[in-house]
Image 1 (cartoon, rainbow over the protein chains, first blue to last red):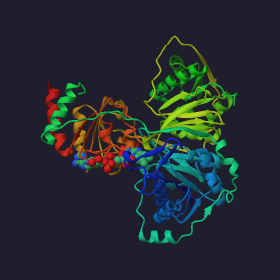
Image 2: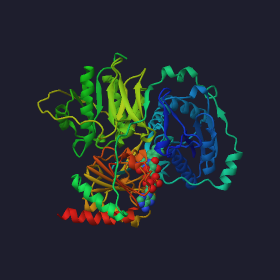
Image 3: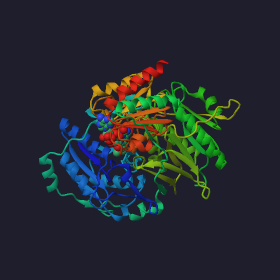
Length: 266
Length: 333
Ligand SMILES: Cc1cc2nc3c(=O)[nH]c(=O)nc-3n(C[C@H](O)[C@H](O)[C@H](O)COP(=O)(O)OP(=O)(O)OC[C@H]3O[C@@H](n4cnc5c(N)ncnc54)[C@H](O)[C@@H]3O)c2cc1C
């Protein structure tokens, strides 16, 4: 089985809110100094899901990531978890693409890779939180898609996938090749092994440009984008928290109950 | 693009009724339709949904498209994408709205791909740009740390999914009239590539989170499933539901279905008690609609105190027993 996993490098989403900064003029987020970017959370789970399939059934895992600068770092991270090959997609034409543009670039890269059985994506990127790329990509590739998976097993020549639903889950049988988007329920990502880190460091990670994957930059030019961010702001929170105190924690707790009662909340 | 007109909604049906999110979509859909002087239509897909047309009209739709087929009894991704895409190609709506629910999250991006359209997900505000007459969708990004306003350019329809419980639901007026159009929903099971094997409903213990008036949630700071018992006890005392942060679920202290947040449940109780959780924006996304938030955390700098109305700084192991003791006394009165 050949699995292609699409991963994205993002600013660390777990930084405290107080450190979060934007530039409203350029409508961009200013990454906090000294905090290295990370692999998007659900993409890391997608790598984990791929490794689980590899452990059980044997598979070759190829990781691809479109991005700028140190994007190879997230590919290396995936390699150190157990992926076999990695490719980055880097070209100034790929900067600031919307979901549709991103899916287009990924589809071209996947077509260049050629044969595959399964494409995995995270359910949504943990920066812009859109949750679109996987499904659009599947439509572009013309393959079936199963979204928000919590478990993926090889079965009956295809895949048996559990999808997260509001009040439970759904079990579906999908043929291959197909695309599955992965949710955190597949399990915590494995830690890179020492061997994995060594292999990842030694591995050559080719960087493909627009030309390499036969993309005409005009096709992904900003003028043609399907969506445009017209404004970016930080929401104003004007809640005043009433801190309830007492001579010790117990007394403060009693006072809290009294105040909630007085305010008719309980 | 002038060939595309009107607003189309994708309805959801829950236990034989229009789902709450659908009534919310009808509410915002009506507002946008009136602003732009366009027609509001809704698509209802299911095995036997025609009976809900009247209700959809009463809630403000001008037109109801009914797509009935036994294969549509439950949401099926391939089948519903086919039917909804087919309708969009025929009816050419300018705006298409869905819920940001397990259904809409799946269906909307597939439609965006298939129709080569533009999509903004998880909207908390929708408006019409006065200059262009186009839809402006405001959505939380970076876990809710920022808000982005997005417009769809160059392509149609302009698709958005709307976060539950963020827009005003429509009001019912049974005197409203409209048109009901039955579609031929041809879905051959042989064209469905993905087969649904089974659907498993997982019962949550206690009160359902979405309906609860009181929610008590615990975070990573709770430390063990044994300690989580205290959260259950407080919830029982207030006849409320039990929520959790993602780490609390992933630690296995409580089933995943209890997760509140951007990628979990959205709740809007009268009272939300947040215990030993830091208040990451991804969590707050699921509870910011609560009337009153109470925070219990030992770290006075925790973000939860920036969104809470009442707070106590300290160890929950000391605070909760005293709090519950006093509550019992007050509730007995
Ligand atoms: C894309 C994305 C989506 C996400 N979706 C969700 C989601 O839907 N829901 C969700 O919850 N999270 C979600 N997260 C995770 C989120 O970012 C945070 O990591 C998570 O909410 C933190 O959980 P926590 O507050 O329990 O843990 P922590 O941040 O570790 O906070 C624990 C808190 O407990 C306090 N504490 C510890 N011991 C005690 C004690 N004895 N008494 C009192 N206080 C104590 C500490 O002071 C601390 O503030 C998402 C993340 C990403 C990137």
